[in-house]
Length: 261
Image (cartoon, rainbow, N blue to C red; front, side, top):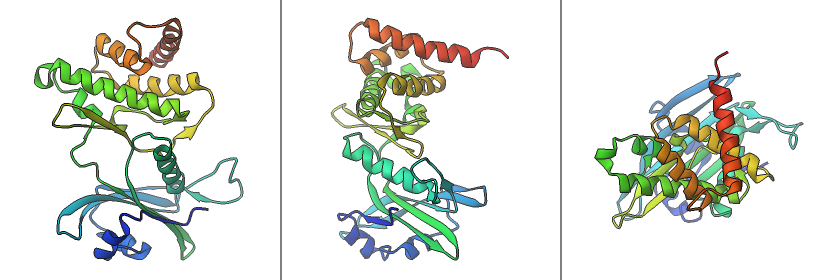
């Protein structure tokens, strides 16, 4: 069981803010929630955002996710209760290890207090980033076709890197990808909310599952934008035979899901 992790670069900053312990983070602004606690199955999980001071006096945003008695079971841990945050944090570290851009971890810890399993994840806020759904749904005239094309292309390539590492997000929607445009026009994309992510050996299954979920939520996209995304994802100028096969599989799932009952 993963007990505690502290990012070495952030330890002095946590100490500077008197937040270098599980107890201090657990009690931090308990009534100031960014996402109010979700209560289910005898436990709860919530997210708060706050700003802490760097040693030079500048502020930086962090997200503190806390949960109590939120568990999951798998074939690897049939005989012990595991915090869902442990799975999410392991995925976060694995994504970074494999070169998939995601959040910057600051702190993780879990403890049993009064018979209840508590867990905390702290990550740095993605300052300057926007959810991809907020950006891609802006009217074309407002953000421009070239800019919209750059955003779609960058996200496609980021997801391709995730799938090349045989990582499946397993709950992939536009809001789970954050984008940021730099002054020179380049775009960075990050994948978040990795609680349900998993490694899978068969690439075609990963692609079909994740891109099907993404397509379901991309209702504002035109056919041209969907094709542009898939071509960027496949790194092709024209659809190959293999790409057409993958695309047909995604379309079949979409049609089946939308079929009247």
